[in-house]
Structure formats: C-alpha cells, structure tokens
Image (tube, rainbow, N blue to C red):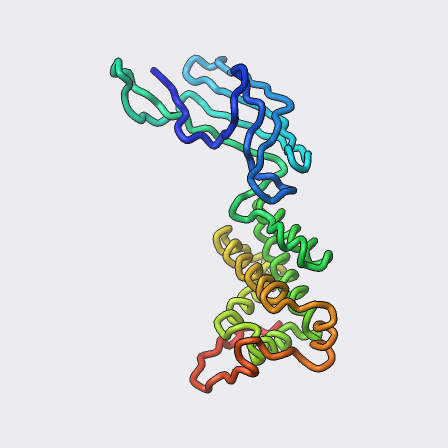
Length: 263
C-alpha cells in the first residue's frame, strides 16, 4: 500500500531532506506568512497491532514578527482515502492529517490588520477578545463580546447612553440603511440572549454577525473618515449628513423592523 499526501495543508520547503520553514497564518501579522521551524519532533505509536498512529510536534517562529506558535500534526492508519492506482496497479491512499496550531487562529475570522490602525485602542481590544472567543469555540462569550463591540462603536460617535436612540439617528441621517439597522438590532438581542438566557448561536451565525460589525467599522472609520474633530461636532450638534444624500428621507412604505424586545 502506498500512502501520499495530496494538496497538503502543511506548506513547507525542504532543504537537505528537512523542512526549514512552514507557511501558516500568523496571529500577530494577521496574514499567512513563512515560519521557521525551531523544533520538529515525530514519532509513531504501533503498540496496537490493529491500528498505528503518527504524531508530529513543531515549534514555529514567524520570520516577520518572531512570534512563536506551537503546531501538532497527526493521523492514524485508518484515516486514509483511496485516490487511485500507481503504474504497478497498487492502491494509492491520501492521508487525512489533523492539524492544530496554538494560539488558535482561523483564516475566516483572522484579525483585521487595518482595524488595528484605525480603531481606538479600547475598541480594538474588544474586537480582539471577540475573535479569540470565537476561535476558541466560546459562543456565549462571543455573543456578549459582539454586543459590547457594537455598543462601543456606536457610542463612540453618538451623544446618548441609549443604543437604540443612536441607531435611530444613524439610520435617519443616512449612515446606515434600514436593512443594516435590522442586522445591528439582531446583534443587540444576541448579546441580551447570551447574558440572560445563556442562549448561544452557531459559529456560522456568529461569524455573520462579526462581518456585519466589521462592515460598520469600515463605514464609520474608513468610508466617512470621521476624525476626532468631527466626532466632537457630532456629539454637540448631531451627525453630519452622509456624502451621497444630504438628509435621506425614509418613505412611509419602507418596512422597518420592530424590535421584539426592549433593552
């Protein structure tokens, strides 16, 4: 039986039959980048005659920021899939390796490198905590964090302690659409349900809510480019009109989402 690894996740370069670096997502650089392999240990467990196990452990150092990561790679003799035959008509199998990298990171929910540059420190700190909770499979904490992040973002620009009132003003003055307002309301209730009912959502739902907030960050901190002087004006005289429409008028036929609960 021949075993091969097709399209391996383990992206490395060999030198003198030894992998000297691997390309993985760096939790500090926020992108996929080469890591030097500092420690590389492998061993097989064949104590059971019916099944064998393979383990590989690595300590990696980012070539850019020098942050350290720990990675494991493993598989067993049954975790293979037939993919075809070689010239001798022997079956070729693909190995299904299991990879884990610590601290945990995920390409889908990787930290936005740009957000670190544009967000105030206290808001970016909350954003980081939300990502960590999501990557570590803590849905209740993620829900609470998303609700907190929404409140921090909105109250940074709005002159009110009432989150709903600020969102109403954002919608009325054209900073967010009616549909977007409904999505932000969902995040408000998401946090309340997590806090008061221990109601957690699926990872897919939480990722979608995170993307809604990331889009809001892009709108307020990048697209509208609101600086500190403008923020002071906003808090004293109200939000400025959006660039495209001076003061958009919401038609009576527009279907607005009515909150099911009060905060």
